[in-house]
Amino acid sequence: MNQRNDDDAARLTPELWRIHLGELDEKMGVKILEESVERVVATMPVAGNRQSFGLLHGGAMVALGEAVGSWAAVIHASTMGKVAVGMDISATHHKSSTDGMVKATATPISLGRTVTCHEVIIEHENGIRLCTVRITNFIKDRK
Image 1 (cartoon, helix red, strand yellow):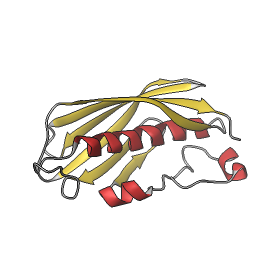
Image 2: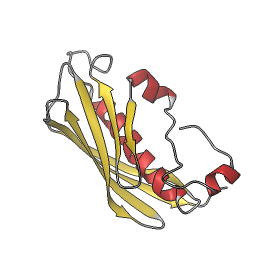
Image 3: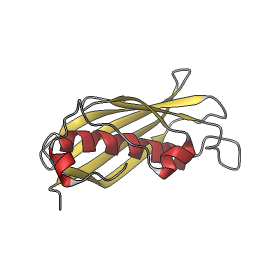
């Protein structure tokens, strides 16, 4: 995500906040479909994100999960004029894929004033769950 100056950040609301993809997100082919405090949804192609055995790379799924979970936390933090930074992430890989598109959906488990926790479900376009990510972010004042 691109850095914004403090004056812009203080005025952000979920309706005005817009996610800006980072370099890794762009290389992975991530596309944002929805962005709000309640849900962040993004897609990513399997092609270009496979490991040496031809399967969707587990690290690519974790990177996608971290991206949408962090964006969700940043959107929540922006409603208080604050920022979010990652504290912890875990992922359970259920299945993999060799082709198609995956969709990641981040929803809040807990939205606090200092800590957020999100669940990110990564599904294949055919509806099969591939990975479940849980991410915790710390909400802090801007410096």
